[in-house]
Image (cartoon, rainbow, N blue to C red; front, side, top):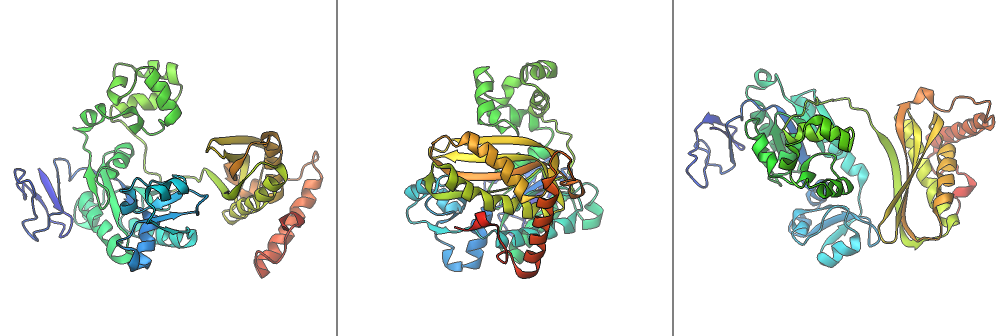
Length: 423
């Protein structure tokens, strides 16, 4: 058995007796010792910061350290993040705020500061990229890392390098992170959830089939609530229930995801860590203080979201080929509509007009608590909004919007607005 001390980074063979219930490092006496027979050969990692938004707020305000903290959008919003103390009361991400406060009435609620979280996230990412160029961001606070071939560079195996890394994140940035280490992305992601917070868990190739067999089918990436129900109706409740089927049978029954079910159930995942994985969508949404059931006020809420999406597309030199409208009813049912464009766009006016048409067909008197708009099928910004003989006015729309962009760049976002922005 190979062991690693997460405080002094000692790696050794049988350095800690497996018979002791609470082993300590023989060098520094730390109890933070991990052991695994494949510790020195595993190289694919998933690093996930612990309760990231809440951790950043506690870092910046030490008075919050021993208090339950919820980061979210007020009484009508949802929980963006909850510290582990709040989670002990049953509070979880995406929970409606009124339910969270009912479960934990003494919680301190803090409005999200995305600019601050993004800045801290970039600092964490920089430390990751200092140990390997193969970093695939998943969100603001988590990423996959491939440390293959870095042992000589860092003077030790990937596990030792990762222990160094998360200690630097904690000491230099002030937030904690958990590590999942394995031989594939699928299992590394699972491992990072096994021992939170400040966790360090490993899943080796030899143990993977037995480890997965007893897990519920929902552990497989891509198996959401609806698909899990379908699988359950087919008698597939645990990963082991997939093993009697061959790949062709699963594809015939479930389509392309059948192939993933077949291989993941056997611990096989050949996906590479892609450091430059393409952004899949850009979106913005807002939750209302009071439910809205009339079209006109919904349109008022829609327009500034379209401007936000347009601004982000232009900043990233991207164009969206598909427009997506998202609505959530007062009873939390989500409705999604989409429309494919003839040509990709960056223009807020085009995004607004297309999403407004979908909104007109969807707003039927029901009460809505949230509206969102987004773009997918992202393409190079150079392809955006070409001149069209079928829509000649588009050229004038683009000219006006670019002129407004130039004014805002010089004088600020509030320097010039369209009439529909006025209250």
